[in-house]
Image (tube, rainbow, N blue to C red; front, side, top):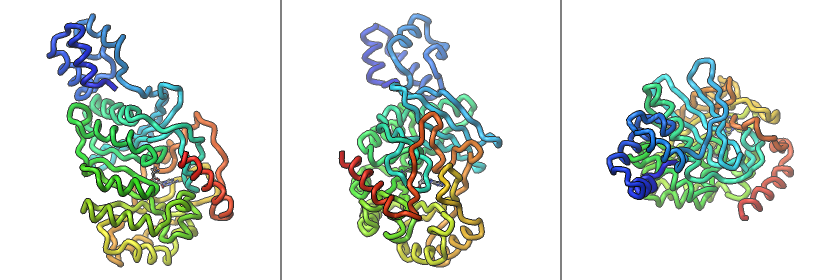
Length: 367
Ligand code: SAH
């Protein structure tokens, strides 16, 4: 990422007139210039100096897939150390241009339905690597005469495991010198790290929070999400209440619809009871196919009924429109094939395996 401070310092040292700083920042962040050579108003020697000194981005697009309907673009990014991650641009019919970014290389949480869990966890991303994914897509859109208007931290990884970098990347997204996106246009999604939800509630900005709930009770949740063994549902809901009290902002609960696992009418009633009265919105996510053969998605009619039960109980709930399934770019499908997958447990069938897995996850998280 090209930073304003570094650029200022460099231009002063090189006796490059100060107006160039503004011109370069404008070209790179507002007009979609991908290289310094793209900035046609710059004299050639300055272009060369800048190219030799600065790296405009820490993420390098190495492969691109576009869905048949053109709505979704998935990019495989290479990082400076050779690791790879994925980011996705979604163009919705209502005009929304949403970018979904990754926060880690691989994911150690191993949720039983998520393809990202099949990737070996390597490391967390730096704040620049997170921000640069957004900046890449922002430039991409600008060149097409379009504007980025939403960012979701819902790609590979758990953003709350990488809290400090997350905050720094958010600052770049909100800074008008860089991306200049309103806080309310940004959503961070977490699998439920209790202490970080509380910290997030105490932050001074208005960034949205989504919680991957996926089950209405502890017993079921820990069967499908190993992280639930570490963070109990009661504690999680206490943290949610703290968040709501503190921020007075609506929280989103994500709920992936898994056939015969968490999609029964009983589950819907239990979920309604759990969240009723809270300032919330339940996002039902139709399961997107992955290579994991231990789970299947719910029938459309089941999802409809589930939603009705929530709505009838006074809980706002909608079903998420998923884009990009044909290029494996939808929720939970990001698992770049450049990396070797690891074996996944069969959590619903064998909870003891999950427990073992969870102990491993926990040990890793405590490191
Ligand atoms: N670690 C964070 C963010 C990444 S996942 C989190 O857990 O929230 C983004 C969302 O996609 C989460 O709600 C996740 O549970 C959901 N998801 C994972 N696998 C999915 C699948 N196969 N189909 C639909 N949604 C899925």
